[in-house]
Length: 472
Image 1 (cartoon, helix red, strand yellow):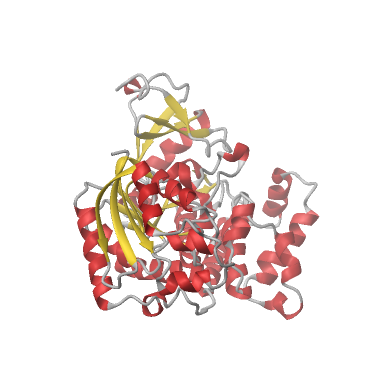
Image 2 (cartoon, rainbow, N blue to C red; image 1 turned 90 degrees about the horizontal axis):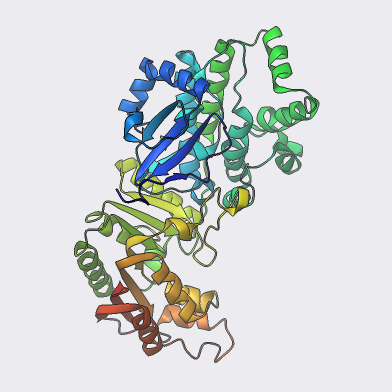
């Protein structure tokens, strides 16, 4: 290891529980535990339920580290975790992803309660993904159960998982902007005005929105220990906690995304590609990805995942980014049914990608800080950004190049202004607004950043594919 590799780097998003913290050492993901957390870990590591969760892959791989192999950390115990292929945030997930994450959280809590443990929080940020499979990552959240104690994570669960699901399932409102705007999730008081009248009786709303909100207001001045003591005195028990978790799980399973159509949902039928165009494009993409030992491929503007699937034949992992939540949800459900562990679908507007958020803007890393790929696919997106969103063509090229690691490959499609899709976008713009939007200028801009390895005209004659090495 170099001197840089031996430097401990705290994880910016891990500071809210002072008893344990995630940090990085080279490529290792480590967790430091204080004295009480170390004792909790010893109990957890010896439990059958936790060993089963590890074996099933429902909790991230975790094992203790020999302190002699590490520089001095100051922690009582250090654990090593498996590295998650690509870190994402709940406001980048589709409805089905958020629901499956919530169900896994509840399953893990139920199994913990059965074994005499609990989880100290209930945040959606406790979960990540191996492709289309959720995994629980906050091992430091487990603690032995104190009989009569309520689940400390209930409020977080509601704010970051249940309330966003209710918002989408009952009102048809996309939850992603709400979660992106508030790192701690949606407050009950924010939802209560939206669920008045007959909406008060919708599944989950009376208990988890109105009653919960009223209880929060009633006990606003009381300490958590005082509230816990009141519950114990009232006969609250582990059996009641288990029953509550089962009811929550039944509710979450019943919730579903409102089905709505749209242009992007049916894009493959309406986009205007001929069979020859599609075959040529698929062949070009396959050759581009197959020629690289790709750890990570980004498919930007992935739509139904056609090209993400091609990339997944040759890459360790693929992140498929698409703006339309309904399209991402359809892709996720298909991948989940297949048991896919390579393709991670995410909801994101490429003209407004996820910024850094939370404390100091770094608690939740922005997309540009996480996306450094061996191959980036940008197929049929340039015209949407340059014409549809008025982003200068030079800025579009610069941003796409920025997602590629040095020496990596960019596969990009330029849609000519004569193409029917470009003409449709231009019809809504003042004439002459984009004088630089033409193929020669695009090629010049691309060549300023990359070495263009090959290009190919699609049979339609109005689209050009480029394969380029960044920094080459």
